[in-house]
Image 1 (cartoon, one colour):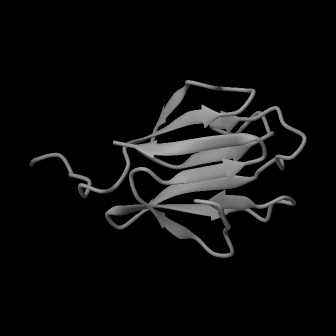
Image 2 (cartoon, rainbow, N blue to C red):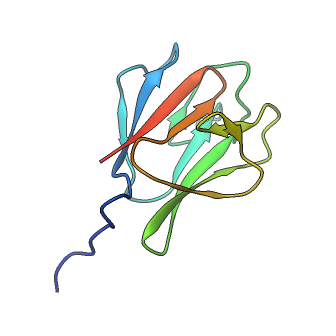
Length: 105
């Protein structure tokens, strides 16, 4: 069978475009990506404004979603604070503490 294809607008990776920690690094979005200060997170951010388990990016159906995991300082998608899981598109920016991740193909 042919490999599962992602819809055209769904991002394939997240790139760190702002921040002190991982600037220039990219992370593939082929499973769940957890973001926080805890060592067990896929993306570990050394930032006082970031919670231990701050946010996650996960697949739902054909798309990718971002969800705040009850963080103290919030997760922002395109400058709006998340109050519920939201679908991601290419070009979207997620701000967590001082770090900004941009969704890319």
